[in-house]
Amino acid sequence: MNIIFSLDQIQETAEQIITQKPKKIILFNGEMGVGKTTLIKQLCKVLGVEDATSSPTFSLVNEYHTSNNQTVYHFDFYRLNKETEALDMGVDDYLYSGNWCFIEWSEKIVSLLPDETSTITIELLADGKRKLDLT
Image: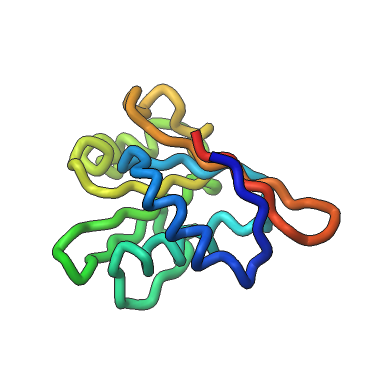
């Protein structure tokens, strides 16, 4: 799936992503500041998370609960120095829990990722819109 969207269309974009029935582990790729966290916040909202969401840059993972009793984990591995740090925090338990896992900077834990994932790549275009590819 390919979409070009502006930030004021991010809610509709998140809805389109969920209707594509991606794998529950979604890897988010893109440059810093391209809107990965903003999109993840909207995906959480579409899934029924009612609590405030934020970037887990310092905590590495945030846990959210949806209105229909699903759990969503949002990871940000930007500050990770070694894969063993992810293992120490129990990343395997999260990844194999069957819950939604939204992962920023997944290239830092590539050998720990399960085979069954979806990937969202976001690119900032010259006109300020974003190009999104879901695979």
